[in-house]
Amino acid sequence: MSTPAGLVLPVGPEAPVQSGEGRKRAWELLAAGAFTTSLSLALVVCVPSLRHWLMAPVTVGGTVIGAEAVRWFRRGTDVLEPRACAGLFGFHFFYVVPVLTVVNRTWGTDYYNPPDWPEAIGALSVLNVVGLCVYRLVLDAPGRPPRRRQPARILNLRTFYLFGVVAAAVSVALFFGYQVRSFGGFSAFVAAMTNRAVPPDLTKLGSILLISQAFPLLVYTLALVRWRDAFARGPVRLALLLTGLVVTQFFVAGLGGSRSSTLWPLLLALVMAHLVVRRLTRRALLGPAVLILVFLYGAGFFKVGGVDSIREIRQTGSVTQAESSTGRNVPLLLTGDLGRTDVQALVLHRLLSGQMQPEYGTTYLAPLRLWLPNSIAPLDFETKRDVGSRWLYNPLYGRGERNASKVYGMAGEGMINFGLLGGVLSFAAYGLIIRLIGRLYRTARDGTALTPQIFAAMAWGLTIAVNADLGNMIDFNMMFTVPVVLLLLLSSSRSPAGPPALGPTVPQPHRPPRPDPVDRERVLR
Image (cartoon, rainbow, N blue to C red; front, side, top):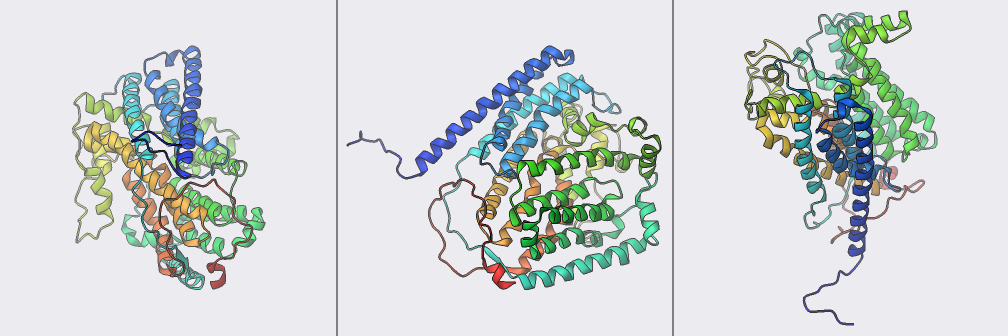
């Protein structure tokens, strides 16, 4: 059979795989469009405050990112696959949060010269549609030609346990022997960390804080690797280990009110257990997801009111009074803690109205300089809090006059620094992050080597970077991710065995791990 001149028929398995993926993506977009449009029409009919033009771009944005969320529900999709999880969280971030913000009016009331909020949220939703299209283009862009594969790093378990125990012991010694002691003892430490009227200044601890708060996740990693077979056979043991991590991490870093300092290690620990021990199912993740929401809600009272709020709830047997005194409630949890719609809409309004001009990198440079020695970068510069104070509360504020503790998200910080272009380009940066994490995750999931699995778990936390600022991501990675990654690098080496694979690879369907694989790490134990 001959073919017309100039026509090249696809040969090999790549063609049907690509065609099949194209059909799946088209179906995902249609399913997301049908669901989001139907939901929006129902909301517009039932909720008067949503009868506004903003629902058009919100619905389009929900459709674009919703197609990514549909991946998570597709049979055969890994429940912690970064792209699917980013889509699931993105649907909440770009569709659910704007709708809830308008319905519940959960925007700030202390901003100077506030905008017409529905109009401002509508303008933000238009920018989000453009940004989400850029995000999808980055995700679906063809990758570079396949390069020679390097062999995976093989973990020397004896070195890993030795260095890990030493690192954890040093961290524990610094926490109890220096950090706690600097407050005057255990009781004084707890009292100072839970004092919301005069919060302690931990900046004087410097790099010691980085090391002293690292031991909970280090100990968890050592235990998970050492007894991974036992945890695979007994999920209750794994649940107890995760509980121990959460309780310890809350005491070490959460007493000051930072909920992220507790939840960030928990997310990393869940992904690590998923890759190293046993694959988690959607049903298995339901429990931790509910507990995380309950923790965010309850710890919100503790963050604002400290121990007094918890005592008030115990005495009254109700959260009503605590919600009134602290201003914390479920709508604020869903829109303020798990979304950035109001503050991003305000930032965009400031730019469009000409009230503020871009800062050209100020909030990006500040967190980098905080981790440098004073001899290299003296602490005499504007921080994100100084910049935020001018953008949100008073354009005449100088450095240190008011500390705005808001988190703006990737798009919000991008707009503050580089205007509308910065907001759109932040979506491209987020797409590149998800592509990189996805590549690391697939390599770890499809192999049996421990080093790529733990490393991919540490990188997975960047999946929710869309909700954070650069400073948040640097701080959390320095405190929790870097110690574990350094331990891996010191305890592993490239495997010289086996020729590297060449040529393109065909995506394979997810297969559960073999029941008891024998690999080089087990032999080295």
